[in-house]
Length: 98
Image 1 (tube, rainbow, N blue to C red):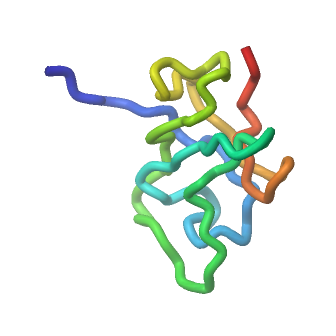
Image 2 (image 1 turned 135 degrees about the horizontal axis):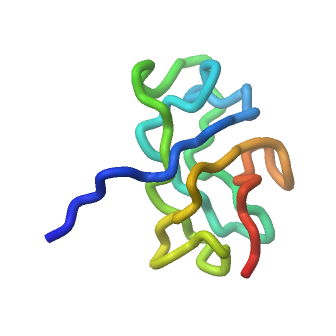
Image 3 (image 1 turned 90 degrees about the vertical axis):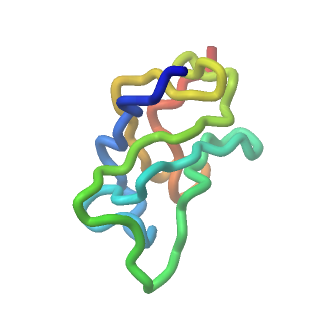
C-alpha cells in the first residue's frame, strides 16, 4: 500500500475572512468543491475563532473538479495552488478546465 508523502501546498490564500488564514493557510488539508462554475475552497470557514495548526502550511487534500487539468482521480497534481476571490470569496485560482 502506498502512502501520501506530499500534497500540493496552498502557496497563497487571499481569503482573509477565513478562520484558517493567518498570513497563509493553516488548515491541515483543504477540499476544492465542484459547486456550479466555481472551484471554491470548501474548507473556507468565516468565523472569529482561529482554526488550523500554526506550524502547518495548508495543502490540497481533495479536489472535486474532475475536469481540471491538475486533477487525477480527484487528487490535485499541481505543484502548489493559490486561493483567492473569484466567483466566491475563496476559489482555487490555479484551477484550469481541461
